[in-house]
Length: 466
Image (cartoon, rainbow, N blue to C red; front, side, top):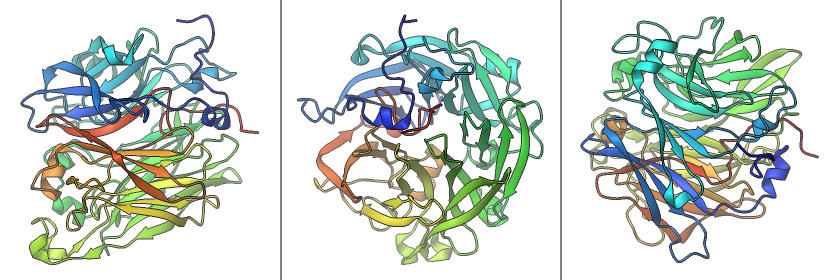
């Protein structure tokens, strides 16, 4: 607790863009065969430092088999909400769920990021008992608590009841209970985010635990049984107000990225694959006359390939789907970054007109067939995956692993952990930094990134930029 608002809290996205550059990145490290505990790596991202691009500290967990995936801060700029904020919280603790174990770690990053340590462990039984949910996933700091989405409901395989969202106390980290009062038709979950002043939330769908824990299920994919809907919620009433079906062929609607400026009522979601033609796609949603609408605004075509170059899963198609597995939006709401994990491409779209994205930049690295090396000559296995953008929008970081069993299906030769960085041109364009290359210890893969002081998929703002 501090006596002044945390200096990393900002009233508006524009003020956050003027904050000092990040010095450290926090990166999740997972042991895909569960032979070792998962870790949190602290990476030096200060280009003037002698340890630039190196892991300078590692927090090793005491358990095995957690499968780290997504994580978030205990508090962010949403704490400045004029309605229900806790302005004197600190952005200090990282909340890291184990997607496979349902265990949650609270990591203290102060006073020195290079000495980060475990503050508290919430065992899975507490999550099960208080929420009926399992497989915790996305973490967002709200103005009055920590919100955590889940991919599983009750029962051993997480299908006895629908998954949803639960809330944790932002000071004690006690699990409080389920968020939803009326979930409507929602029965799958993945990501969520909101527009706090406008008082609505958006949630998306991946699949239920049997559809992802042991790998992608081809019959479920070709049968269009993965998630393909967006759900809109009254944030305060905690009830579903509208559901939009993107079409059953648009399988796996994953990351949702609303505009950061709360005066704007639109956002984006990425769809992994269209089962009719293997395209990936970007969709834009907006609210008009009190009703939410959504339309496909960008498509990314598959690339033809010799079947002998493809993993068994893709050989019948003789093509590499782009596999849009992550998207991220810069704080000025201008550039949307899109990971094409299959084809090994990071795309940058100018979304100044949110319903007409224009390709502004692209760089290739990795990919199932292309296997484009890093400019420094190193092999980048996998493809661009979890993205994080600096607050000023000048640097974009990404890793290469999606999920342990899915990595093995699409990249059977392995996905050794790597993290890279690209510099962004004033008017767009992305160029990989030859000097920035993070190698993770043998046997570890890398997933989501958080930046010191906040980033473009962490903070929620309560005041419009001027």
